[in-house]
Amino acid sequence: MTATVKRPAHRPSRRGVIVETAFELFASRPVDSVTVADIAAAAEMTSAAIYYHYPSREEILLEGLREFAVEYVGAIERIAAEAVVPSRRMGALVEPFVKWLSENRTSSIVYFVQSRGASQQVEAIRRENALVLIPILSAAAKKARGRLPAAEAAVIAVAMIAEIEIFASAFLSEDRALTTLGRKRFLAAGVRLADRITGTDVS
Image (cartoon, rainbow, N blue to C red; front, side, top):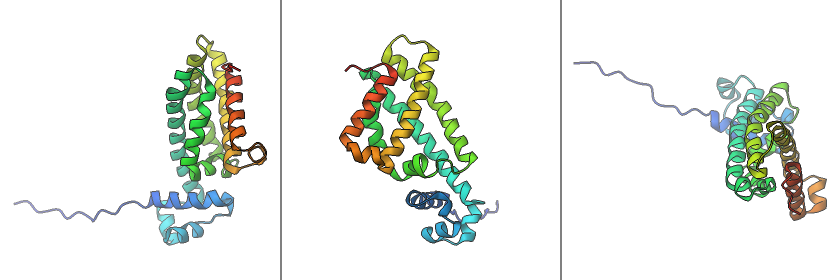
């Protein structure tokens, strides 16, 4: 008769709770003003419990940004396939992307607005993400335009990434461009710019 091995009770990791709570704080004020103690209090945990999972506030931020970056790439890839390619217009990306930003507002604010320039590691995530997005947007540009040299498609992709990041930041922070134009005209301007960058402007 074999002895029964007693296994420790399953304890679900609180890493997800910590990241989610931290991002709520990061979205509402400057990242460098949020302390581990603030995160612990908001998550109803002790600072020691936070440090058990993460060595620093920076590591919490980086993990959340990495998770968001994967979702962001997935959203752009899906929108390109569902909207850009069928319409043959890069401008078709804008409205579905804005809808996605609104649905993921907290993490989007941290990624596109609050964490910008926070550290070299944060900027490394942004650069790595751009490298993943370039072939996705290059392929979308080729399908929208038809025959297109690879080098030109890559330049278009880089320009589109710049537009997406600036547009997202302005939209999420409700900066002067958005408040001056109003939401409808702001979105229309984003559509026109995307089409001009790609050469799919039909106006």
